Amino acid sequence: MKLFEYNCVRIWDWSEATTRRLNEYGREGWELVAVYSGWYYFKRELKNKEKQ
Image (cartoon, rainbow, N blue to C red; front, side, top):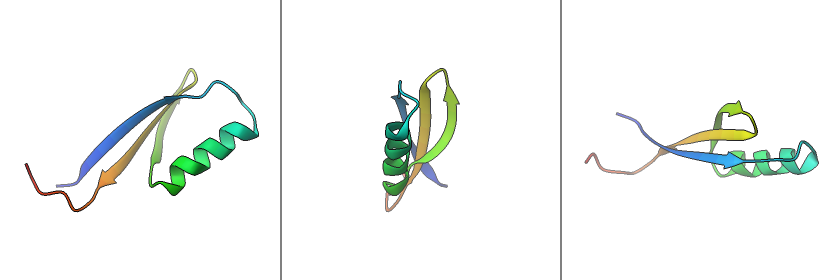
């Protein structure tokens, strides 16, 4: 079974800074799942974790 961790981030501006931050999250392995009213929802798979 795949395990995921989730992250919710508020990004207010709509500029190059937004693109830069989204690209940083992507390089860290985060996948953008949804955007709603300035909130960006991400997930990424947990690797090398034993089943609990």
